[in-house]
Every structure is written in structure tokens, then in C-alpha cells.
Length: 494
Image (cartoon, rainbow, N blue to C red; front, side, top):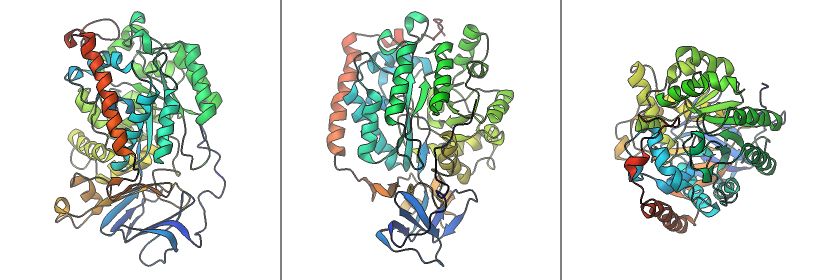
């Protein structure tokens, strides 16, 4: 498998000369943590952004350029924008849905699939608008989304969420998810939300040709994302890998996320999930996978040798009880590891600050206090996420020529009283913290802790109506949760 290009960046993309006048200048920071190739940390630093890219960075001894707008970061930490590498945004329509709680991965999937079969373009557009706003408030500037439910008659759901991202000015990596195995085939989803292989592949190609932008600093890129080994056929996995190679886009799926998946793959394919991943042609650096809780040491080494990325989803992993992902081992093996919020039905808060803090704490729980620092967590949330998406040097760091995506984090008030020695440690050890300002391509999407977009109240009102309608469908159907919560994809019962 060939290595996907990050896009045809011009030779001068990283060597932009400082302009006479920048579009935006962020000044007065307590610390600028660049997370660049040299991991520079600049006390009293400043960052200039022009035409959507970082045009200059300096410290208190260097004169910044004049700018059309100056954003003060006094007493604050400035970091690159955080990168969310796994999400199912539409699931905020069934957030904390009581009948699905308290069980395993397959419990809530089998309960919620019938509700998600009611998705349409409006529901996806509104949920994406609200979900991306929530992410921005938590310091996210680039988000993926894994939308794999495509009900018949629901419309063009991927284009609907892309429209929301463009309205908000968020950098967006939607993935065209798919499911081809329904209940009648031994899978979990109902027939109404699965498609046949030809339709999935044709729609995948159409969406890439319509929306995917391979250029440096692109705001929208697509990936192809069959849902999981138990919801698509091996033939579709192979065909999707071949299509991604031809279109030069990335691949994404869930992998090794639950012990039940091991059992299912052994029973169905005669091999473990990561062996099956390789068998269908996905082993390589074009792919990144979600969760990856259950690889053994030999499988971790293989992932590192392939360059396959992993979206670590700590809150979701804990809520679903899948286990502790071997994050330190994967990073040591050379696996690009980013962070993901995952869907709102398994991890009901979409804050990458929270995921960063939780990743740090889980790392220490697994291997001891010295094993995971705040800087390690920041690096996974930024540079690691860029590695998963094939955009190292472009997003997830602050360097001349990188995307002008940054976050100004407050370090004041009661929560930070006494935290004087290290702004990065304080950022994750204290809190909770939300962004003071979130900047994407040089434009504010969060300003003074609030969404910069005036339509949010109306969107929240509409979201409540849509979510209520979808959730009422469960009661109207008269479904007994005790009968929906125990089926495994192989048709057995736990």
C-alpha cells in the first residue's frame, strides 16, 4: 500500500515570510506551547496569522508584525488547536439516553440503532452545528466525524454536516461510514440503515469528488470508513481500501475496541481483529482506527511497523468498560496516537480538554506517575491527531506555514490560584477548563468563552425538538430495553 500524500503543498508552504501586516496577532501569552518539531515553548510569546496560516512566531525580545486585529492572551496558555480524531456527532440527539445505559458496547448499539434509523438531513445538520460548537468551546479546531448510519430516504447526510462545519468555520474531516450487514446477516443494525456494497462505494466516490480538498490548509477532507468488522463484509473492507488508494484518501474504522470483538472475529473469521484488518488490505499508514483497547504486544508492534494511527477515546473506553488501551506501548512502538471524544451516546461530553486530562490520568493509572505527563497528553491531542489524519506539520502545531489554528486557555481565577510554576501542567491538573478563545484559520469561532456564531440559541431550540422526536420513537414502539440489550453481533447472548 502506498503512503497517502498530505496534499500538494507548495515548496514554500512552511517558509512564509512575515508580512507587513498580519490578519491576526495573538500577544501577551504566559506561554506559547508550539508542539512543533522542536517542541518549543516560548514565555511571553506571540503568534501572527495571515491568510489562514501562521506567518510568524516570536518571544518578548522580538518585534511582532502589525496586525489588522490584536487578540490579547494575558496570563493565558496558547496551544495549537486540538484535533478530535474520532466522533459520531449525530449521537448527541440521543445523549445519555436512559434505556441504553449501563451495558456493554453491544447493549447500547442494539438499543439505539432503531432510533438512529430516523436520521435525516435536518437532524444531522443541526446535530453537527451543535456538536462542532461544543467541540470548539473545548478547544477543538479540527474534528473528524464517523457517520455510518445512512437510513433509506434520509438524504445526503455527509453534505449536511459539511454545510454546518462551513457555517461555523471549523476544520472538518468527515468520514463516509458504512454498514452492509444487518440483523438478518448476523449483524446488529436493522435493515433500514444498511446499504449494499455497490451503493456504498458509489456514494463514497461521489462525496470525495464533491468535497475532498487535498490542498495545504484545506478546511474539508474526507476519509472512507466502514463501521467495524461486525457490520460490514470482508469484501466491502477490501473494496474500500482499494477505492481509498485510487482516490488518495484516508481510511478509518473501529478496531479491537471490546473483548466481545475478539470472540466474534475468532468465531466468524478464524482470526483476531488485527489479523483480519491486515487480511482485508488495511495494514498501512493510510488508516487510523478508533479505540484499539485489546491488541496484544505483537499486534502493537505490527501497528507501529505499519504506521497505522489510533484514536484513543479514554472517556468512552471507561464508560463502556472495554478496558485500558495500551497507549504508552503504542506510542513507544511508533504508532501515531491521537485523542477522540467518541459519540455522545457512549461518552456524553465532547471536550478534548477533558479527554486530554483523562488520557493523562489513565496513563498514570496504568504505568505509574512518571509515565504520562501533561505534555504527553497535549502532544496526543495536537500533533498525534495530525499524525492520524496525515497532516503533520500542517495542523496540530504552531510553526510558520502551519494552519492558523490555536487556542487561548485561561489560567486565572480560583481554579488556578497558586499554580505559578508550569502553565502546561496547570492547564491539565487544574480546571475544569474551557477555551477563552478558539481560532481556526485565523478566525475566531469562540471569543471570550462564547460561540462567535449568533445562530446557536435557535439551533439549540431546534435540536431539542428533533432529539425529542427521535427519542419518543422508542416509547412509541413499546420496546422493552431488557430484550434489546443482550444481543451480540454473532447472534449469541452474553
